[in-house]
Length: 121
Image (tube, rainbow, N blue to C red):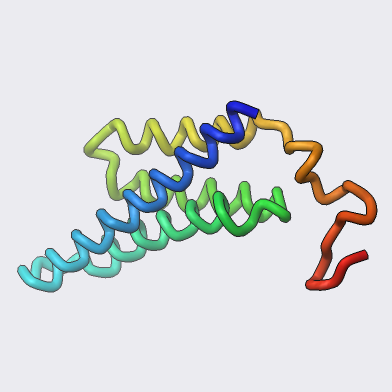
C-alpha cells in the first residue's frame, strides 16, 4: 500500500514538474528565438503529460498505463539529463510501478463491481 501511494504521489509531482519545465522552456525558446521548440515541448510537456495520464487516468489498464509511464519518463529524462536527479526520480517511479501489486479492493477483477466501457457488468 505504501509503495502505491508513493508511486502515485511521485508520478503526480514528476508529471507536473516536467510539464511546468516544458512550458518554461517553450516560452524561453519562443522569446529568445533560440530554436529547439519541438524538442523542449515534445519531450518535457509530452513526457510529463504521459506520466500524469498513466498515474491518474489509466489505472484501469495496467499495461497501457505502464507503457505510457515508461515512454513519458524516458522522453522527459532526455531533456533533463543534465540535472541527474530528475532522471533518477523518473527511474525510481518506473521501478516503483513495476514492483507494486494492484490493490485488491480497487482491482478490476472484483466481480460485479467491475466497470467496462461505460457500463456496469
